Image (tube, one colour):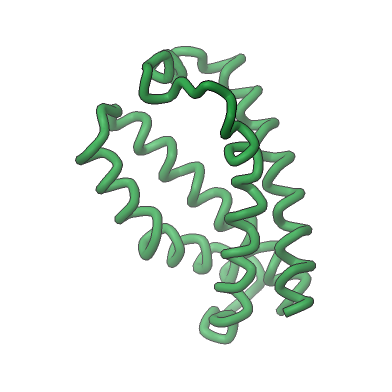
Length: 135
């Protein structure tokens, strides 16, 4: 359990930095992609903002547990293990969530595709770090 928590915390910090750095760069260089977020669906009163900022840690702990449980199933080099881990997570978890989100919310295909790619990138990065520090 200690290894899961430590690797989860390490990956959480990495994902936090990359996520918010990527968000800053995305808004700065691709502002057109973020126009659709000017929608009452995405406006919050601020009382739950901390939950948004903690998402990198929530996903990192969940992925850390998933890695610890199933790491023996991922074969090959460090890079192949990390990639396979990310793809497996994306197919099992992200695809169904993106499907239900698109079918039930007033959001665009571009939003859903960007969320899917963002989640896939997070899982691949997590998988690479897990494969390195917790083989």
